[in-house]
Length: 399
Image 1 (tube, rainbow, N blue to C red):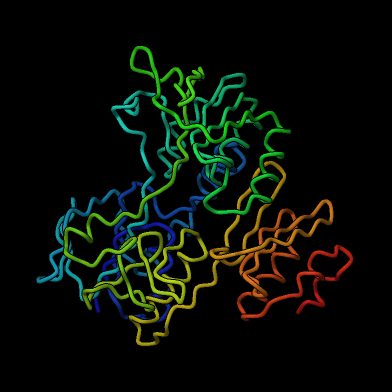
Image 2: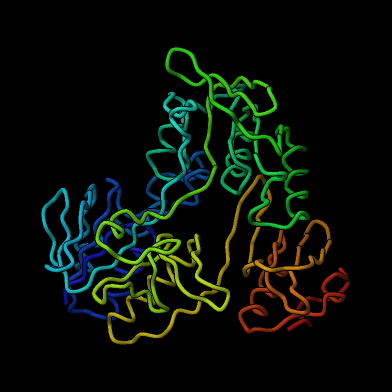
């Protein structure tokens, strides 16, 4: 059995390692577009940019892991096409044949439109090692960074910039930061956190265009007529699933590369995992963008290929580090109709309910609330909202 994996991020690396463990004789080729071996992305814009985590600690595996495991890791490879009839992929390093193909192509950051100033120098997405290495020299104390987007990427970038002594202005077009992913209670809590650290936050106002001089960004014109001068710009305006290769090959696309519960695409010889893949749930077809999901789905597909398959059971959880705060999120809050606030300083958590059913939790410096809620959600159980709200309640009793 020859397996080719396109994409050497967290999902692709997890699938390769798991498949080797389950199928010792399989031929495994892992193709990565970046020149680096598989590495962690979350620390890029935090520990790595702050200088607290060296490059070698970003690596997912020891340098000799891939050779010892007989996984043919190819880096710096551009995959241009999938020949489904011949079962082969065309790449910048030649043609690779497969019995089974796994697409772990990930996602790409949204770019600012070129006709609105997006072609200026000094504008940085936050996605890959090359992005963070390129922006690192900009982080000089006293400079002014403009961050577009008030999601978790934008807020994490703001926290790092303030820790390095930069002036920070963050602009969010929606009425509030984190509007797409969190309740107003969580938005308010993080807005207060950042403003207390000196971040200027502008909500409910879009950016008309980025302005520049001599080919480099120097500011932004807002929709309300204001102009903000800056030294550089960070983009945190979302990501898009990387589906171009799959779409050109005629695979079904639906909010990503459409798969079934085992990661199988519309071609029986091709699977998709991680950020690029969507899968069915009782709430409809969804995509998840997180490290745990990438690992779990990679493991699921590897097991399927090794003849030990079972339907994927997503257990969504996420995290974000901002200043001294660790936010941990369990579950998906889609469809919530009320939020229960548990305030037990210095810990705080927001519990999302739909009727009497617990859907999700946002836990700020509250690992116990996170773990208890996560176990309840994964077990399909809930907790009495009145007990949750009472800081005197021992959360262990909710189990």
